[in-house]
Picture 1 (cartoon, one colour):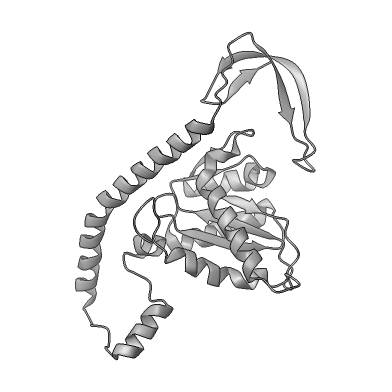
Picture 2 (spheres, rainbow, N blue to C red):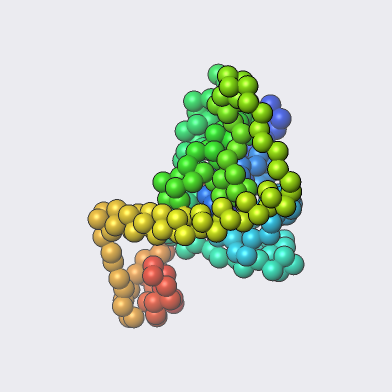
Length: 252
């Protein structure tokens, strides 16, 4: 989960986008916001959960809205585990970062000249993303979430051309078919995701230059300001106490 913005204010007063992507299905949601405050984010997260179910955990950066008491209390109430990326390694949430990049590129191509209609375009862009099969899973996000292909514009055109009505089934037959299909699909999705993770890890490692610190090492820390993450300053030196994660260290 992430916040995109501030963006140019739309005609409806929106300046931010709350982005939520389900890790298992790659199903994305992009919700326009007038303000990126904790109360609004909590409200939209609850509404999103009412549509697709309550997640077991959410991964966010350490931005102020996500660290607020409102969000923490909501997660406690819904029994959702909060997982946060490192301040200096936000790429941990790579799935959302890639979707943000895709969404921004699509918006740039689709908006009007004045750019004030971007919030009205989100449902159409989301539909396009949701019905496209993902290389990491082999299926579309819509397909995995709802266990059937979405009826899109090409399907409507095909039906009109062939003039063949959709077959009718009873509810029991429909649910049984969905369960059978998901039982067959899940192993395939798992295989695709594991391969995608291996490929992504290999690509990252080719360009990465790992740097490890040992207890006693003296280091500087890049500390961003509250107002703007670009106005960061180096502070220190500090002493490394211990390593507490793959890229995280305890210092003093």
